[in-house]
Amino acid sequence: MSESTLAPAAPVRAGGLLAAAWGILGVAALLSNALERLAPMAGEALSGGQFGAAHWVALAACVGFMGFFEGYRAFQRGFCPRVVSRALHLAAHPRPLHVLLAPLYCMGLVHASRRRLTVSWSLTLGIVCLVVAVRMLAQPWRGIVDAGVVVGLGWGLVSLLALALRAAAGRPPEMAIELPAAR
Image (tube, rainbow, N blue to C red; front, top):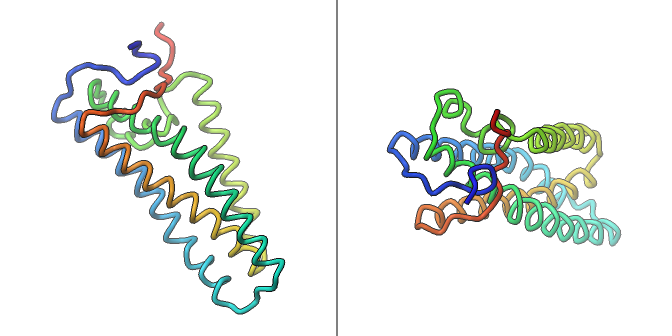
């Protein structure tokens, strides 16, 4: 296993375990917070009695699309394994600044390869732009989109916690951690 590609097999110290837990729980808290904010908007659309046939079709399409592409493809297959792998690397190699910024470190927003930093920050900016755009939608359309996002985020949260528990049981994900090139 190369340090630049996969989570290391280095021994983990107790302080490192706390750093990894802070990273994973910090990311889980971000996902939970988004779920708490979006679920009521989705519920409002569903309970508002404004749905016609087109709304139900749009809801099914949005939930299916976001469940597969956001939940499964983005979170379960990409983001969550990377978060857990980077948390394991942090546990084995804790540095004060990385420990302080553990959730950002685990998400690949700090101390990552140039490519990972570009992708992570671009996705973050893109998500912020989408959030702003969706907020401008009127109900029930906003709630329909939010329902899809809730499904994707919920899938992501469950995936993250399941992968973290598997890693704690000795079965870590094999995912590139994309550290910066050594100088």
